[in-house]
Length: 285
Image (cartoon, one colour):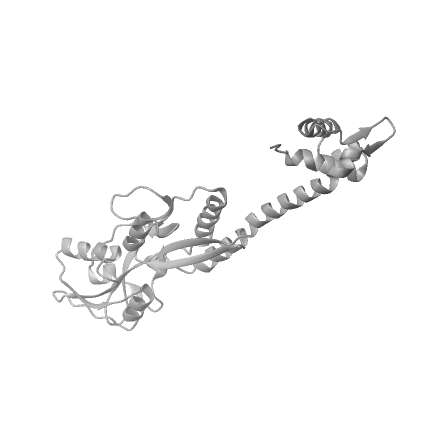
């Protein structure tokens, strides 16, 4: 079976359309010599003379006239195949940790959509530990999480600083257990808070567990408890109370982007994601 080079077929059709090697070279953005080489290789592959050329005239041979319609069909099929690849919708499943997700998320999604309108974006919000497990299982394509434990893979996007927050009217008396609100018991930020309290010898009691950061923020804003938040995502109407209540300082962490995607489109999407996060991340308070 004879395999044809698409570029050579395109050169032949362009010469046939314009009846000129010079004009065909201009249309295809190449040289007349390159056009001639491609045509010669095509004719050798087919064993046919396709173009008759004299100093004054370029025209189709009898075999070239017969081949022209088939050549056009081949190029059209090739173009449809390429267009089909670019128009197929692809899915991108992104996990974002609840303690990381902030007002920059709409910008991230807008940037991803502008980069690849054929991309179907699915976002999963969960705590960092659950998202890390999901990433390791291959359930999600990428994750933006708070770095967990000693794990060092992933691209660092930014440093994350935490503080103790409560309403101005929240009362904490020394010697009484500190009233805490937190996410689920598997939340890494909750672990940071409780370990710091235990190390400082401060008693605490958990009075509220929420299924998401916004619910925990509501509980703190309502005056039920104090809680640890990223300083840039502190609930409206609350204040940082580390010094006021003599609470232990909290270690900083890193926000990282994890992904094993390797194809060019996905890698570019990840670069778009990282750039948008860095450029539009609100400053810490």
